[in-house]
Amino acid sequence: MFISKFEKLKRLERMGYRFVGEHAHTAVKTCLWTKKSILDEGTCYKQKFYGIKSHRCLQMSPSIFFCQQKCLFCWRDLKYTRTEWDGDYDEPADIIDDCINAQRNLLCGFFGNEKANKKKLLEAQEPNNAAISLAGEPLLYPMINELIKEFHKRKFTTFLVTNGINYKALENLSEEPTQLYISLDAPSEKIHKKLCRPQTENAWEHLNRSLELLPSFNCRKVLRITAVNGKNMTNPRGYATLIKKAQPDFVEVKAYMYLGYSRKRLEMENMPLFFEVYEFADKIAKLTNMNIIDKSKESRVVLLG
Image 1 (cartoon, rainbow, N blue to C red):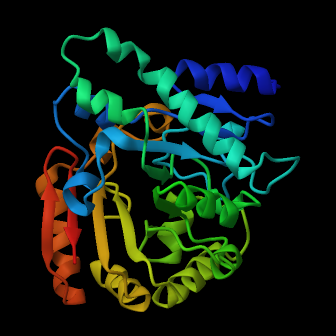
Image 2 (cartoon, rainbow, N blue to C red):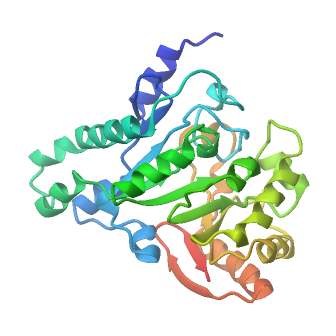
Image 3 (cartoon, rainbow, N blue to C red):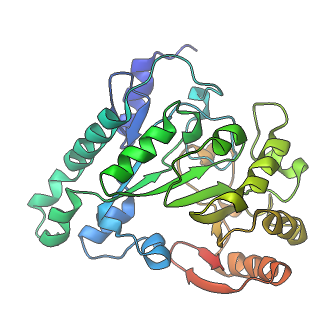
């Protein structure tokens, strides 16, 4: 069944996304932890681990419909996904202006909420961390270098998340983010194909090229393992080999969350409990000579460093 671009946008808007720019390839969605922080009900594990302020974080993506993978655990409706960029695109400065305005509009209801921390709410009007990770693959956006540079010009810190397949874009990243994440969601090519379902050839080889590039970056470097029970919580030695190749500063082992459209592809049982994540992370830590240095039970995530 053909779905028009207008219908796609409307469906995602009902899920809390706000599209910005003339060409509508960029979206903002206010994170649950941004809202919780404003209400003094807790903060994101990224605040605990890395010091960013949850109430001042802007969660966005410049490439909402573009990704080379159709991961089973992705919360998006994957029938919208395209593997290569097509069409025109918006300028970074315009994207950022519109993203900030969209975030302000999404948070405006808190001004009428007596439980809101007014100081945090006012600070939230001027976000200072960009989580370039909402959905899609940001390295497919043709002006990703310029986007990061523009964020930094505005005194933002930037957390860039990539699936590692577009290693050439990573190689050509002249403006490094504050923190670079590469998703490492499989210990082997076989599991990568089954779980991440790459839509391009040689995806595993390209991911490994990105891991080999990681030591050359000067920014903070993190590998993210989304742990899916019964799918990829196996072969810790395979993960250890890949981690040693990448030499990251940190490794996050985080539970898959049974949310969104992933519920059509996976079962509740695929979401591991915190102790299962912790035990699996501990096995990887021992094989990489890393330590468990932090954790968040609420988010089911363990940090190795």
